[in-house]
Amino acid sequence: MDCNSDQEQFSAYLLGALEVVEADKIDQHVDRCAPCSDILRAEGDVVVNLARLSPQIMAPNRIKRRLLSAIDTEAA
Ligand SMILES: [Zn+2]
Image (cartoon, rainbow, N blue to C red; front, side):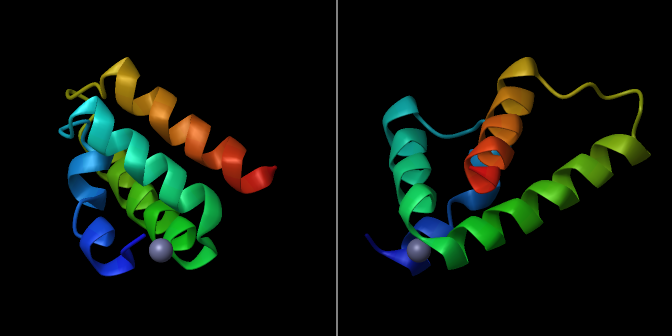
């Protein structure tokens, strides 16, 4: 688990730009790492706010599912 290198991938992760294997690695990391989970959630908030500012651009369902799953993980 490498926090710095995984954090560099959070933006791509939130945009759904990572390969499934890489995204799974991030999922498993943030499940176990509270600081990275907080950072990912904060970056997710930015993505959500950007989406709200740009109503003509719909977020793909894949991203929504990821965000919701990250929020569920945080709440659990
Ligand atoms: Zn970490």
